Amino acid sequence: YGVYNNMDLVNYYNDYPFPTKLTLDQLPKFEYETRKNKDFEELWYRPSSEKVVVITKKDNSFIEGITLFSYLFSTFLLLLFIYRTTAFLVKSRFKRKALTEYFQFSIRSQIHSTLLLVNLLSFIVIGVATILFFIKRYDRNNQDKLSRAIQIMVNEVQNQLAGHGSFNNGILLFETGANREVEKLMQDISEIHGTDVNLYDTSGTLRVSSNPLIYNKGVLSEKMNPLAFYNLNSRKAVQFVANEQMGKVDYISVYSPVRDEMGQAYAYLNIPSYSTQGELKQEISNFLVTIINLNAFIFLVAGAIALFITNRITHSFTLIGQKMRDINLQKINQEIEWKRHDEIGELVKEYNKMVHKLDESAEALAKSEREGAWRQMARQVAHEIKNPLTPMKLSIQYLQKAIDNNSGNVKEMTANVAKTLVEQIDHLSKIASDFSQFANIGNPRNEVFDLHELIYSLSSLYDAMENVNFIWEPVSQRVMLFADKTQLNRLFTNLMQNAIEAPENQEQRLIEVSERISADHITVSIRDNGGGIPAVTRDKIFMPNFTTKSSGTGLGLAMSRSIVEQAHGDIWFETEEGEGTIFYVKLPLLRGTH
Image (cartoon, rainbow, N blue to C red; front, top):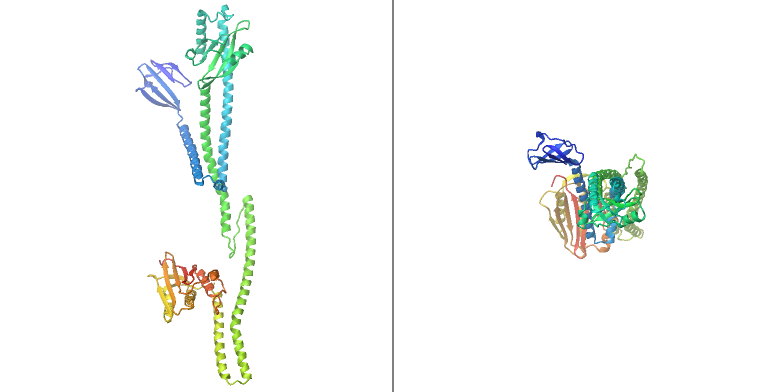
C-alpha cells in the first residue's frame, strides 16, 4: 500500500513502485476507484481532498480460476467416493462376500485405480515431505535471522550503555532516571529493526519492553522463560532460542546476555518473533495451492493416460474374447493377426495354436460323427427292412410247403401271400421314402408362399374323415413365408397325423389348429385330445429312431424338428397326461409382409 498527503508519498509498504508525487490526472475522481496496472490491480481510496490511499494486489485471476477448479474437482471426487462407498456398504449390509466381490476389480479398473492411486500417493508423499522441509528450513532460517538480529541489538545496547559506569553493576541500570533512557533505547532499537524488544534483569524479571501492554494486561508473564534463564544464567550460554506460546499462537523467542566491559552479564535481551507461524502457514498454504493445482492437472492427465492404456489393452482382450465367442465347430475359425511381440502377443499365439488344434479336432470329430451316423443309419435301415422281410419269407415258405404237399387251397393261399407281399413291399417303400426325406432335409428349396393355402389343403383332407373333428382358427391376414413348402407340408402333415393317432380309446379324434402372429413371427399350435405324453418319454420325443408306435421308424418328429430349424424357426410342446398335447411351431414371416 501507499499513503499520499497533498499528493506526496508519505508512507508505503512493500516494493511496489509507487510514484513519489501524484499528478492531477492521477487523482481519483470518486471516493473509490479500481485501476489495472500491468499485472497488478489497484484500489484508490480518497477519504479527503488531501489524502489518498492506494492498495495494490497482483492479478491472479487465472491462477485463482485454476485453484477454484482444482478445489471443486477434488471436492467432487471426494464426495463421489464417499457416496459410492456409502451406497455400496448400505446395499451390501457389510456382508463379507459382497465386500470381496466389490474389490475384485476388472483389468480396466485395476489400471485406472493403480495410476490414480500412484498419483494420489505421490501427492501425499511430496506434500508431506515438502511441508516438513518448509517447516525445518523456515525454523532454521528464522533462528539464523533472529540470532543475527539479536547480536546486532546486543552490540547496540552494549555500546549505548558502555558510557554509563553506574550501569556496570546492574543495580543502578533500572533506577527511575536511567530506566527512562533504557526505555527510549529499546523503543529506538524496536523501530529500527521492526520487532519487539524486551530487557530482563539478572534475576529474570522484565524491566523494559518496547510493547509493555501485553505484559501489563497479563497476556504474558513478566518473568523470563525458565529454560532460557537457566541456560543463560547457570550454563553461561551465549544465546538461547525458545519455542513459546501466547494463547493459541506459537512463536520463537531468542535470548542473549548483555555484558559489561569485564564480560559480566548485567541484563538479558529478548526478541520475540510473533509473525513466524503466520508467515510459515502462508508459505505452506501457497505451496499447497500450487501443488493442488498441479496435482489436479496431473490427475486429469493420468486419467486420460489410464483411459488410453486401458482401452488399448482391453481392446486386445475384447478382440480375443470376440474371436473366442465366434468359435464354431461347424466352420473354419479365423486366427488373430498380432504384429507386436508382447505379452498379449504370447496370448494370441497360444490362441492361434488352440484354433488350429480345434479345427483339426473338429474335422476329426465331424468325420467320426459322419461315419457313426452312417453306421447308425445303416443299422436302422437294416432293422426296419428286416421287419417286413420276416413275414414275407415266412409267407413264401408256407406257400412253397403247400405246393410241395399238393394242398387243395394253393390258389387261395397264393392270393393271401401275394396280398401280404404287396403290403410289406409298400411298408418297405415307406421306409425308404422316410429315410430319403430325412437325408434330404439339409437341402431345402425355399420359395415364397402363403401358409394358409398349405393348411387349407390339409384341412380339406382331414375334414373329409368321418371320425376327425378339424378346427382351424386362422388369423385375418395372409401369412407369407420364405421356406421349403414341400418340407413344411410334410411337417404339418406329420403333426396332424400324430394328433389323429394320439387318442387310443376314443372314436372321435380332434385336430385344433390356432395361430398367433407377432411383428416378425407366426406361431401355429396343433392340439389333440389324446392321453398326453408320459413324463419318461418327453425328453426323447425329438430324438431320431425313437417311437412309441409298433410300426413307426421314429423319424417323424426328428424330421419335423430338422425342418423347423432349417426354416430358422422353433418347435416345442406342452402336454398333460389325460388331457392331451399341444405342439407349437414358430416360423419367421417374410420381411415386409407384416
